[in-house]
Length: 192
Image (cartoon, rainbow, N blue to C red; front, side):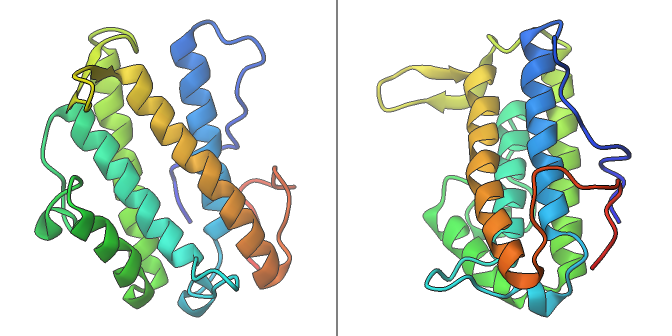
């Protein structure tokens, strides 16, 4: 069981700042995703939702890479392992490797990789926000139009990734064992 979410993250109804509101929304998406992938063994994490080849194992590893990319961009550092060994986050090979290799990974390893990536991203974001707000330029580098993305864009891109994939995880989890919903009835949720 993860210690990333000691209680269910419920975003404030009246956030005091943009940062508080955006970070609360990101934490809720992270927790919802964790809830959707928790309590399953390796075989169930590998269960596809036909006709797609998408699995919860692939989503876990993909979102671990998304979190690692967030941390790398915020801290202006290279990708960590295992992605550094596959060309880093700018490499299409690393993204393809993540997708393919997830099928060979055991559930505890996938969960640990995702949790380490979330912790790394949280720490990098906290460090950056200690220096200013979301308007600060990121280390992402220039886009094709020559503009640099600020922290707001990088964090919102991460939130968008979660929003998309939490929906996928919801459908896959329901097909596996019937777990549905937006909020768990108890926290932490009971394993199935």
